[in-house]
Amino acid sequence: IMQKQTDSATAPVKPSPGRTAVDEASALKLSSPDDKQQQHAGGATQFSKALQSQSHQRNPGIEAAAGFGGLTASMADSMADKLTPTELAVIISMTEKLRQRDKDIKRLTAEREDLAARLEGTEAVKEFLIGKVQKTEAELKKSADAAVLVGQQTASDQEVIAFLDGRVQELERTGKKTLETKCKLELLLNQTRDQNDKRQKVLEDMLQFERQQLAEQEKEWRSTKKVLVKEVKHCHAQIATLKAERDSFQQQNQQLKQALLKRNGTKSIK
Image (cartoon, rainbow, N blue to C red; front, side):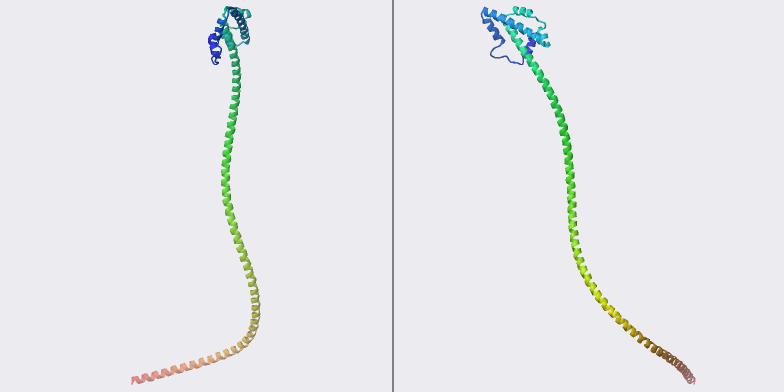
């Protein structure tokens, strides 16, 4: 179990190419007996300190795997006396690597938590920005639609303004022509008034003259009428006389015709 835990903990880190645990073990084997004893004593001391520090760190995963929980200095010394320098060197190297990996794990855990917090903040900012962008796009679309409507309304207003400008210009021309016509008509009216005044004066003079002539003619007509009445009466009397003579002549003529008829009738019988 400890070997598997150690392999899994030390797998991501590559060993130094200059000096490995096997090289250290070989160096310990090649040393002199005195050196071996000194190295053994030093290694035991290092091993004891490493075990104590490892037990004080209270890492549950590593203590459960290695079985180092609750070790004392005497127990560590007893275990160190039973191990060879090579084994001590390997164990010390593994312990140092485990300590370093433990620090790396804590550091990576903190970094992971920091990155997770940053990621959550980034996601929140991303969602906020997405909502803001969507809102901005909607407002932009509304603005674009409003701009299109404003453009259409502006074009329509421009057409109306152009039509009204043309109509105003036409009315101005018509008004100018009407004003000119009015001036001409006023001048003509004044001339006509003057002429009419002159004509009226002439007509009044003629009317007065005619009235005078009429009065004189009326006097003459009255006198002539009296003469004519007398003449008419005389003519009527003459007409009555002529009628009487005509009747007398007609009667005589009729008598002559009858006499002639009788004479002619007698002659025819004979």
